[in-house]
Length: 100
Ligand SMILES: [Zn+2]
Ligand SMILES: [Zn+2]
Image (cartoon, rainbow, N blue to C red; front, side):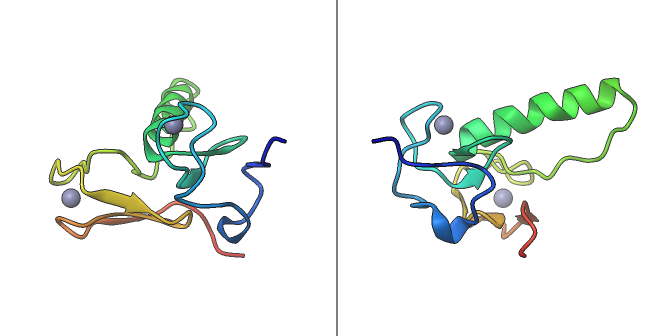
């Protein structure tokens, strides 16, 4: 049976940090991508793609930064809970999802 990891599900409804990312099957799910919940690596990949498309269409909005390596201090000691991404080293926080 396939577990439902639809991106529309709130963080409370997915086994956050426990189930593996459906895309890479390696790292735990942490953030909601466009269609499914992803790990921080795959989420960052997807966002970068979107940011590039947005930049090309001139409706560019600065993307939230939620990356496997902190863009501020280059530490990889980062984590996310579905709503926020944060760096444990420099305490940078990025809000990635609105609470309903
Ligand atoms: Zn992944
Ligand atoms: Zn940092």
